[in-house]
Image 1: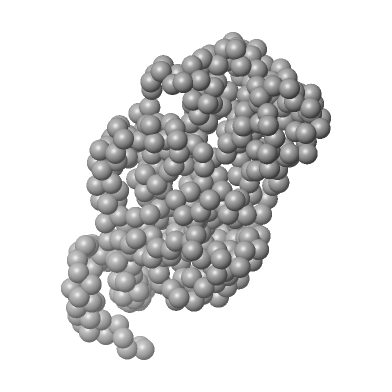
Image 2: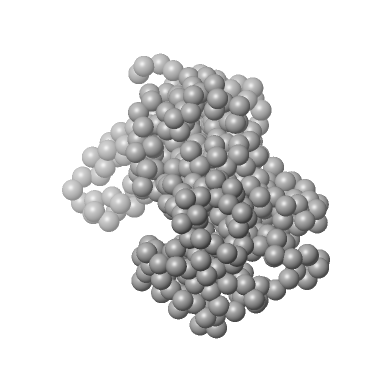
Length: 433
């Protein structure tokens, strides 16, 4: 068996490719079922975020497994495989393990050390368990990767002052509104007429950072108006006007700065919509949705400046340098966690022999116990029978403890195989009887 990951991210693919491979929650189950239908894929889990799509699998054959996953991605995205492949990466076994742990720790994120990715990995594990697409191997890998992500954040300063996608979007807005005064002295948003479209987690973070950067009041629009009102109520010190999606055009005309972050699978702000608004003042659109909420053609309009998640690199590069040394420290922790997982993985080779040994000794225990109990006669109480049975089980467990520990301990594959052969021979575990 082999652990394999195939995917693409902000490092390998532009947003126009990533949005075609964004798998919404409503499609995750069908995607997992489709992948599991391939006979060579034993376990599978999907990580889909605004900056990456990654499919983690346990496969029987690496080449056949890779081919099945890539065919799925091509069919889902409706992009020809030869056009899609240049944007894909794949890692196998120890490299796949290391990659997931780096992702979980925020070391592979657009914003180095971002915290949101850890909760997304947790969600990936939960979904895989809910739909029973993962098994003991991927569950162990995901659990240890989440633990590694927490460890990096608790034992290093990587997450200190880390920028999220949402805060990077707000900082980008500050840069585009006026000249920067340095990392802590960007222009205030007090005079901006701000509109936020969407009421999910990203929008909550947006509003948090907008308030911190001087925003005095804003309009929050969401398809479900009640959800917008509920989110607005969480910010009692900020004047927020909550509206439904039908009011979007009315508030687009009034706004100077617009953030979009919705789960819409197609753009709802495009050139024709902007043209119909008859704008007279410049409006800045910052779209952090993937798939994109704002069509690329809005840039053709004279009064529109439009930015998407790929434009955040300008902000990220300003904050990245001071985190690189901390990232090196985090990498060493991640590599330690990888070793622990691979040692556990290697120890699985001993499981069949251990099970045979345990089963053989258990059969002997039961036979001898039955003989002993039959000799004791009817005067032997039920309590005494339980004591004798517990004694026999304790003896077997004590006998097994040392050899099982030795067989599963970290060692070279050659050493383990030699030990397994000795155990097989001594206890005749290869014979049918």
